[in-house]
Image 1 (cartoon, helix red, strand yellow):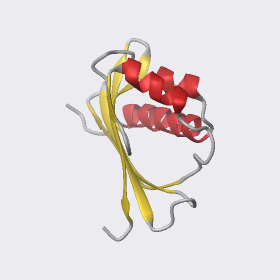
Image 2: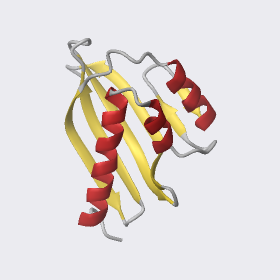
Image 3: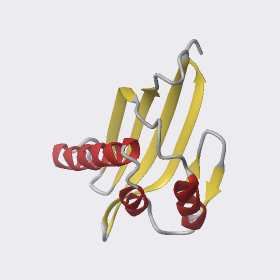
Image 4: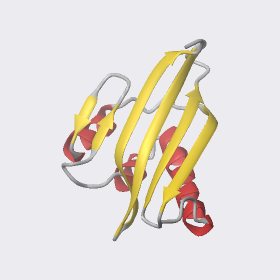
Length: 128
């Protein structure tokens, strides 16, 4: 198995950036598309534990569309072979001084393209 095959790393980096643009722009259709449409998909959020795509889609529809801007730091994308990757990043929001967000995603190449199959988002004090 090749770790960080350059072509695969470029693909996942591009889809991760596409996801980030959709996230801060509240493009729910793209966000929904980039999550695996399956009941085995999991998203642990800052205040919710979502099991299955139905819960994730419902969360996205009810989430506020404002104040989503953020700055990323220390983003690490690692590919394993040509069909699986992880993306980890820290994020900061002006609306949350002294806090740092953490986001991790597991990406898998599906017949439809790269999809998030598991995600975790949490926020902690910056000093931790």
